[in-house]
Each structure stands twice: as structure tokens, then as C-alpha cells.
Length: 104
Image 1 (tube, rainbow, N blue to C red):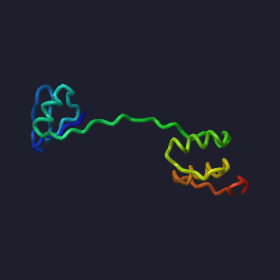
Image 2 (cartoon, rainbow, N blue to C red):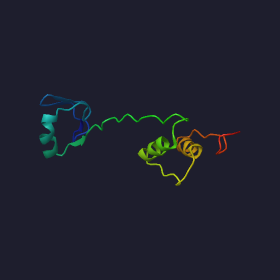
Image 3 (cartoon, rainbow, N blue to C red):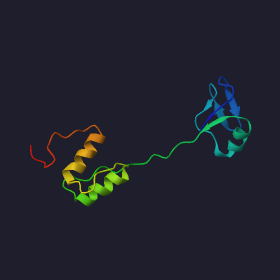
Image 4 (cartoon, rainbow, N blue to C red):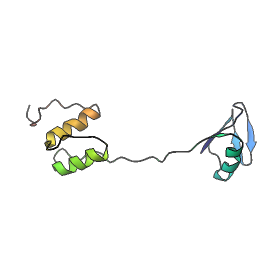
């Protein structure tokens, strides 16, 4: 966790934690109670979530629907695979120039 001291210029130690210019980059979890009680600001690291890539363009429509749903994208009921792929590409800045039927 990253901890910010109330004094943004503080350079020194708090227990085993070292602060430089008011910031400790890798603070000890054991010191959390102290920091909270003294008004330090704490930033907890958010876990990095590896997102699965999109299914193959040949994958079943059901796989594409499942994938888009997992990404929070809403698609029209009864949408064809090409429509689902286009929706994904547009949402990610990869615009397909093929018509919905997949033929140019």
C-alpha cells in the first residue's frame, strides 16, 4: 500500500516504513492502524485483473454473447455474430469496415 503523510515534505521513518517527500511507496500493513489514526492518506493497490481476449471471429454466437456480457456491453437480442463482433470492435476503437453479413 502507498501512504501519504500529512506533511507532504516529510522525509524519514515511521517504524520500518521510509517516507520520501511525504510518500511511502510500500508501507507495511502492520502500520495501517497507526496511519489511519494519525490522518495519513492510504492508497491500496488494486489487484490487476487479466481480461480474457475476445473469442475467435469464428466462435459461436453464444461465445460472443457471453464475452460481450462479461465486458458490460449490451447487444440487441437476436444479433448476428458479425454484429456482435462489430460492437466489440467499435467499443475498442477497432472499427470493422465489413458489412454486417461479413462480405465486402
